[in-house]
Amino acid sequence: MSAWWIGCALVVAVWTLLWLLSVWLRDVSIVDIAWGPGFILMAGVALASSADPGQRAWWAAGATALWG
Image (cartoon, rainbow, N blue to C red; front, side, top):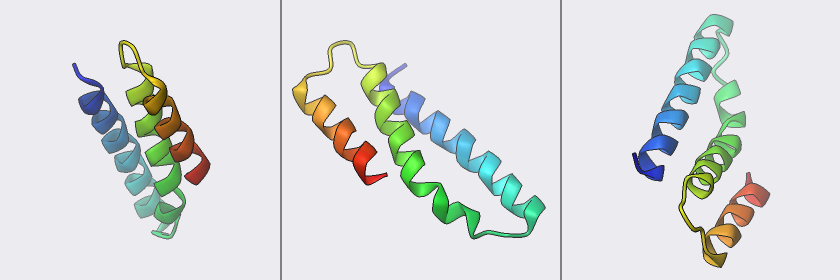
């Protein structure tokens, strides 16, 4: 399975759990907090599952982590 599909599956799972939590709490404002960590998760999975990540991949993951 490619890194893209693994990352998408993880992000969908995390966002589904977050949505369920927001319904239970009756507070949808918690969704805004998860945007940055969601992108960091996706970048980390893509980097970790890459066979030989190059320098550009490390820079992109690092920039994403700083942003998130």
